[in-house]
Structures are given as C-alpha cells and as structure tokens.
Length: 298
Image 1 (cartoon, rainbow, N blue to C red):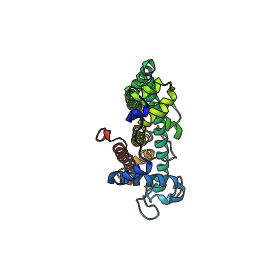
Image 2: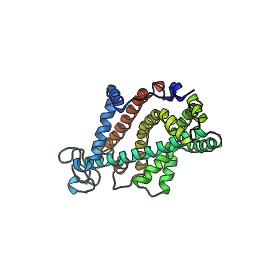
Image 3: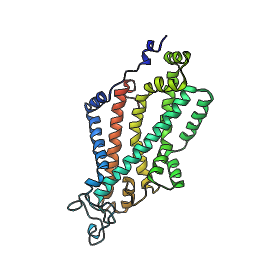
Image 4: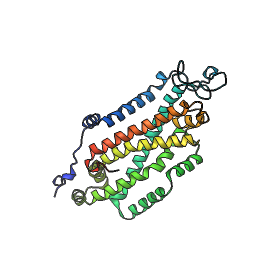
C-alpha cells in the first residue's frame, strides 16, 4: 500500500485566507481579532501614540495633596502615584506583555511539541524518560514553580519569558504525545518505515502536517495563559521590574490607591482581561475551523 492509499496521508489543509475569512464570519472570533490587532498596533507604534513620556515624573501629575490625578484633560487616563501618565505606561506595558506572551508561548510550543513528537514517535525508553519528566513538571503547581524560578534568576524580559515557558510546555507535550502515538500506528507511517524513510523525513513530512492544526490552536490559546502568568508574576514583584511598565506591576505599584484612585487598577486589569479573552476566543474558533472533531471539547 502506498502513502497515497491512506486518505490520512494527505491531510486537507486550509489556506490562511480561508481561515481568516471563517474567523471574521464568527462574531466572537472577529471581536478577538480586532482586540488583538489593536493591541499589536499599540505595541508597534507605542513611541508615536504615547501622549507623554511614560517614565517622566511630574509634579503637575499630582494634586495639591500629592494624590494621582483622575482621567481627563492633559491625562486621558489619569496619572499614577508618581505623577506619570497612565495612558503612556499602559501603551508601553502592552508592548511588554505581548513580547513576553508571544516569546514565552513560542518557546513553550516548540519545547512541548518537540518533546511530545519525539516521545510519541520513538516510544520505548525514550518515551518513558521524557513522559516521566513531563509528569514530574506537571506535579508542581505552575505558579509556585514560576515564582521560585523567577526569584532565583535576575528578572528581565528574556528571563521572565523563559520562566513562563518552562512551566507552560507540559500540557502541549502531553497532547502532542497522545496524537503522535496514534498517528505512528497508522498504515501510511508503517509504509514509510517499510520503504526505508528516515525518522527525520517521517517526522517532518508525514507526522508534523497532521499535528500542525493542534499546535496552532494550543499555541493561540497558550498566549492568554502566558499573558496572565506574566501579569501575576509582575504583580508579585518577581516579573518585569519597575520602572519598565507591565500591566501587572502597574497594578502592584498603585494598589494602595485602589479606593481613592480605582482607575489605576481598573484600566490595566481591563486590558489583561481583554487580551486574554481575545486570544481565547480566537483559539476556540481556530479549534473548530482547523479540526472539527475537537468542537466543543476543552
């Protein structure tokens, strides 16, 4: 039997244009795409659209009692406890959150998919070692492990991204391992082995195309998790360090003014929720579009 004889050997692929068109036809996914696009544009053009220097401390940014100014006038979203423009810090914080979210999730996807595919295809002692290590990582509470790792290393954008990736790859690895094990038993893979195809050729030309939709979906959904985890670490003081703004440390810095200046917590909290929701909505839609067999499953 040839590889072409098995319909699964030639997975039907949808072009990027087809996927985008179907996403835009779904109101919730379209809303998510609009939010993500707005955030990305804000991050890319932050130096141009920021109304003020996000690091500049101004006495004009505080009232006569030394308290932050409310939204309005020269400061559209108000000022923080040091008289800095909150809108500018939130815009720059968008860049920070997206860079860490995309970078950390990208590393987690590559690591998780690599471990899962390797263990699933080769099986035996390779799978035993890799999957036991994965189980060990899953046994630790993700947030606690991230806090410990972040506290050990000097926090920076790269370190925070690596820490988040180290605790987020295990779920991807488990899912990819299960799918790879199933695919490895299919006839078209057995045929490739019988005709002498090497592991690298089989992995990249015959297994990876079948796993690509799952990787894309989990990769999209994972960004919301990394954004939330980055905000949590920054809020706890072991993530992005001031004066570099991130949504989490903006909340941390200004939490003492929660009662008298609630906008200092409300606006960054709203952005965190919006970005996480947007990626979840797009990820759910991608799951239905790329693999209808997963529809309604979480």
